[in-house]
Length: 338
Image 1 (cartoon, rainbow, N blue to C red):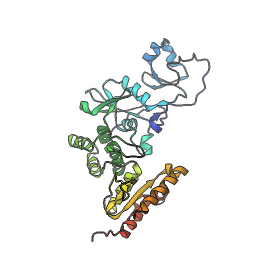
Image 2: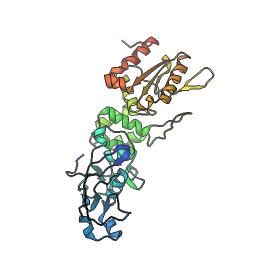
Image 3: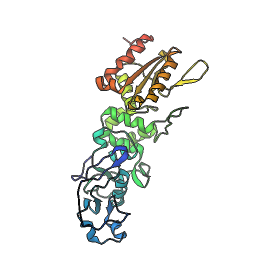
Image 4: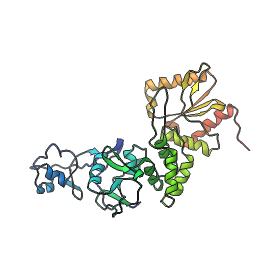
């Protein structure tokens, strides 16, 4: 994927937002009307607001891209920037990292925060070339194009495929797990899949010559429905690399009366071992109490609970913490094949 050589001002994609910001103090500029204040806008929008063309060159505005102005210090959501740029670039959709952020797909920090908006020209015209845009050109089936909140972008399955040339294998599997995740349980949050594992497979089959296709094939074979976060995916993959049995996902631990006790992140029902990854939100007093009750309830019926924390992973990495799962399985009767 080739990037355009110029970029928009600093971008902050946290929670799907893009920030077009600079520090600048300007005096004696006519104030912008409310409809344009605090956001990027096109020259046609400026004219529609009744401003003269010369207002676009006042020093309180930055030329963010051809035909686009941004007030210094303005902050806005990525969706707004993407809607504006696709609107002045006919036949384009957001793709790659930009589409992934708009779909709220987790990405590595450096890719999520990179400053370019990725646009793909799908109608046969030339790839977009403008400041702040990484332009691409490829044919897209109608099913590979969506409009979400007024923003044209690639479908979830196509977005995932376009990430295959950019992400390491584990992160690409995590992205696949995110898009296909489906959760329905009696407590906690539920999830509806954005696409199916079959949708990802059809993308791989139909685009055999796309960059990153080997990575995509490997990730497709490792993706599973029911993983709820990137750390859970990476822990599951590390367990597989260590030669341990494959854990069950979306497994419910119940007592003898059939009452639900816990939904562990990863479960080994044959050995009655439950594994949970506890991230930062587990540090609250309320969540800690809930986790203790969870562990005590399944311990009371003979299960072993293994908790992996973010601190453990920072110290030893995902592969380094798998020994705790291995020891629990061995104590429960598992033996590695010779």
